[in-house]
Amino acid sequence: MVLKNIIFDWSGTLVNDLPPVMGATNYILRKLGKEEMTLDEFRAEFCLPFTRFYERVAPGVDPRQLETWFHEAYIPLQDKVEALEHAEVFLQFVKSKRIRTFLFSSMHQQHYESLQGRIAFNQYLDHPYVGVWDKKARISELISKHELAPGETLFIGDMVHDIETAHHGKLRSCAVLTGYTLLEDLRRSEPDLIVEDLRVLQGLLEEANWDWDAVLEKSNGVK
Image (cartoon, rainbow, N blue to C red; front, side, top):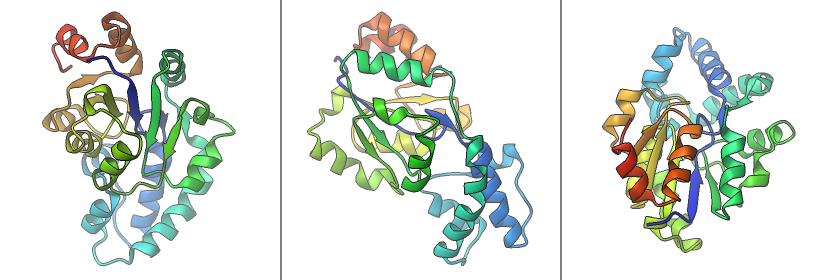
């Protein structure tokens, strides 16, 4: 079936914001008198919805206090957020094919908007949804509102929660290895396809003329 819609995750899929997010998380841990995480520890532990992550690493702490601390630390670090290599070229490619595009992200709206001066990806995204804490809980709303045919809709993300959300909505799914989650964890979530980056996905889509079943046949389904 030919794809007509793409839902993008933001962090780790279109932009690299891992350094500031990890920095803000370690700031919270320091506030709580806890040991900071290394990059490997953070990638192994961090998950969405992020409330589950903080219930594990900071049990009993008021979520409003955690959010205050996070923003306090993140804002000075947000200049370190960078567009991922191949992301803009892929977005331009998608728009040139008149594919409908959606953003479905837990990114705080204020932080998302503050980046648009440097990383103006909103010009390629028809329907941005930000501040989505639990994507599984809201994917049906997006599908219904925009009358998306699940078989014609691809969800691209870098985390297990993204793939679980795609499964929940009966959408096609592609995991990218440019973000927060390690390959072995993504494999366990059973996406349709795992690719190194968006450049690889673009090549597969071009070769298959946007037929997702043909993409999977050519790629053997997983990396």
